[in-house]
Image (cartoon, rainbow, N blue to C red; front, side, top):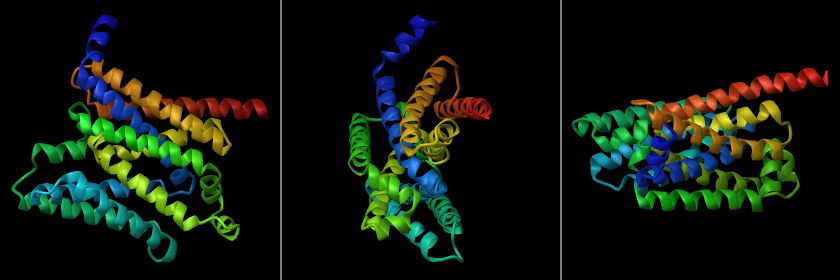
Length: 276
């Protein structure tokens, strides 16, 4: 079995899948820390639906999907945040509005375009084994930028995450920080859709932070553990999917992340009991 697994891992498309998956999981986890702790975790889900609608329109109109979808998702992220912050009437409903409208637009585009083709299905359910060399390079660049932003702006991100009002009064340009996070999460979600699909990308954003919060209470601890958990969860999911016939890779990755989260819940309960 080990020899079979090594043979599978030696294939170039599996290596590409591993690189893209790890970098996307890492990016989603780091960005997810801020989103989840600010109770904006469902923004990722809303943006993935927006991304699917944009990709559907792009394919039906003959545009390049990523080139068309990224700016659309970025603008949508700004509008969602603006509606959530400025309008009490909308609040979290802003996400649902964008998500449902985007799915409706995407579905309409598919029907008008005479059905779903393979490229659209890959964005809906993920196509990790079909990533290109260009997408590998792009995912590595995105991960590098996300990590660099967190290293350079760590203290400001920490401050904005827990108390945006105080951060603004302290002279921190909170709007700029939110814009940077919004742009990065938008690009990551669009690229991540090709890996996990619009229906599963939210899990890469939410699960790592949820797992980390069960064991760690500091922002630094949660951030580091979330990054590690995302990579471990993806790797386990990929290996399991490679050894079980017909098991979708996206589903295997979600199962792995869920299992790790449940383990962290148990460990967190034990740690709490010991303290008491």
